Length: 263
Length: 239
Image 1 (tube, rainbow over the protein chains, first blue to last red):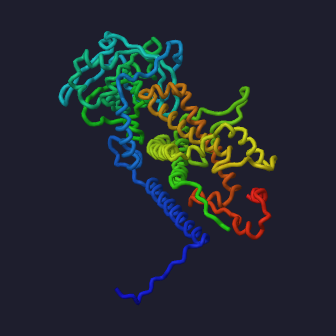
Image 2: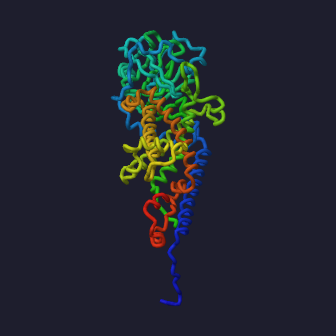
Image 3: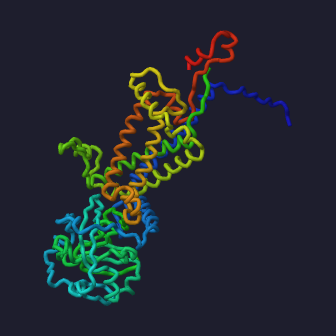
């Protein structure tokens, strides 16, 4: 090796130099990471909206996150986890009416001719009358109804347990599919429910509220009460029922809300 | 002579600064959610003092009609809030840093003295280590509040699956009130924190970015040689 190249002997850093150096590194990293965070945030804010389909109305990366989070929290779902129930006296005398989509926009609706239409397969449908449904064992529930908006209200509903209904009308084979789709007779409002929630023991097809037949604005003659979901899934005035392995259309999932919306 | 004194660990600084934007986003998106049912306020004897929140506030921050968007942001950034907080707590437990953080027996009396000192009522301040007694209480409280936000948040988010958490929080309705109140608490903490940081000055602020403080230390040895009559007392007075 050549020895002509003289190695510089570094003097130990003074305290001042150390301070300067550490300030530079730390604040450099601080502002670089801060800038990176700002760029990341801008990217998220400007992210394109998802392609409208079964879900819609929210930024694509946020929808992916919602779906992933949903899958994670579904691990905690159990049919043994029951919503808290109350005494009948606690129930609201005049329950809140929050939305009339699929009801007020259907002037042609005639309750006397109502029948529940169940799509059995691509060819066959089954029609079920309200009397047939009322003939089944009645299940009552007084629980805290929760709206996605953030309000909650103790309400008293009665009807047939959805799992009883499916068993009685021999729909168990269809119900093995992953999802149930429900819609109003005019198809203006529609929801999708995954199988777990369909078979939750507190999920009912309700025809009574506070011991009386459900009023029109609360979804007469038959509505869904699914306490493991926000109110947006509790479809009023059920017209059609169907089963599928892919997610059925869901009114609020198309408007940026989580498809699962489970509690 | 200037001396570099290590103050805050890398992990403490990192989690502190990650938490700042994440909590801001959580509060921001939380407002979108709260707006949809803005039921809370403070009233005394039926006389409404404060309504959370007035129209001008919502309009100023463009809050109205963004519930779905707020939920989407909230349910993504909750993960970062949780993971970051968990990192800090685990670090604090296993590094032993909790010894300098948690209030002890003397802290509550001392914190009062710190308060009097900060308000310029009292001249001296009780001797302190990394954090003074008031800081110990405040910084421990904010961690407890963070845990509270996660727990009450879970209670509202999955009140049926986590029914026992919901029960622990006094039910769904009350859990939402707690979750909201904690958020108001963060805002108050933030305001006081900022004022205190400004008053404490550059050296203190730098420690939370760079990790160290620069302290002025007397040339103890030399001084002893030059002025041997200086006693320990005079040194104490200087520090």
